[in-house]
Amino acid sequence: MSGITYREAYLQGREQLLAAEVPEAEQNARLLLEYVCKTDRQAMLLAPERVLSAEEETQYREVTAKRAQRIPLQHITGSQYFMGLEFAVDKRVLVPRPDTEILVEEVLKDGAIGAKVLDLCTGSGCILLSILKYANSACGIGTDLSEDALAVAQANAGRLEIPAVFYRGDLFAALPETEKGYDIIVSNPPYIETAEIDILMPEVREHDPYMALDGGADGLDFYRRIIAETPAYFAAEGRLYLEIGCAQARVVETLMQEQGYTEIHTVKDYAGLDRVVVGVYSK
Image 1 (cartoon, one colour):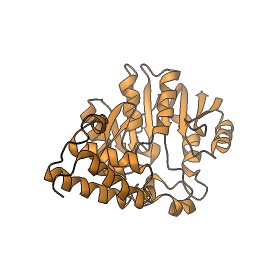
Image 2 (tube, one colour; image 1 turned 90 degrees about the vertical axis):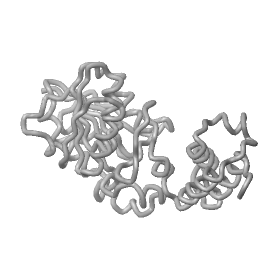
Image 3 (cartoon, rainbow, N blue to C red; image 1 turned 120 degrees about the horizontal axis):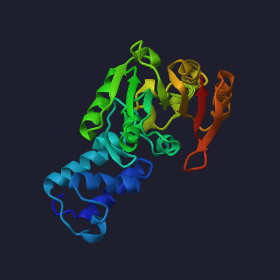
Image 4 (cartoon, rainbow, N blue to C red; image 1 turned 180 degrees about the vertical axis):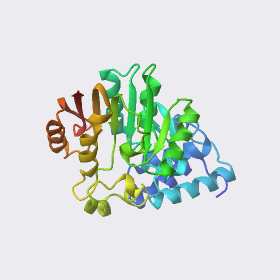
């Protein structure tokens, strides 16, 4: 193994990940090499003949072997960027997806300065903390049923120096009785149909928390509860933002209409798929 160059290591890692049918194998091999060697994406161009130390070589083989076993890249590196911020992630939380940035962008676009924000099923805290980072004078609370997830969210809030409060419990039941009057309520709840979980890619079904995936028989259990219970927690007027599965928009829009929401619309993600449903509730 002695004397392996940066480029040679990358090529070996790439072939290993391709053989294991890892999605985006080339990118993953590069990112893992950058993680081990503490380099950036220019290193392949500027220093391809750099010789790895024995320690770097060993570590790179170890992390590529883990990725070949379909352990998520972010669980190996321990982090994921979201809305330009670096979040700590591990097996206790759902890894933040780029498409979820659509939800945060919609909140910020509609105006969140000075808003009181509630994030249900907060997980790593990426949605709430991103909103609070970019919306001046906003304040917020996150709830989650998982104590482990809340530990990650609290650690992220501390590391990013973003003040937020977190409560453990089942959706609104986590909140103190007097805690109401929200301007914005957001959620990326579990929305996978129970029967579909077993056919998801290994990185998801074997490593993401099951409770962060399972949305019930039709995937809509949490939407029914959130949409029905949210009005009691709004201020005089409030906006609800829900991330959805790409085939769930019409049903979620109907649930909002039946509950008295107005200005209901669906926002598409970067692939042109339905991703976020927004509605306004006025008392």
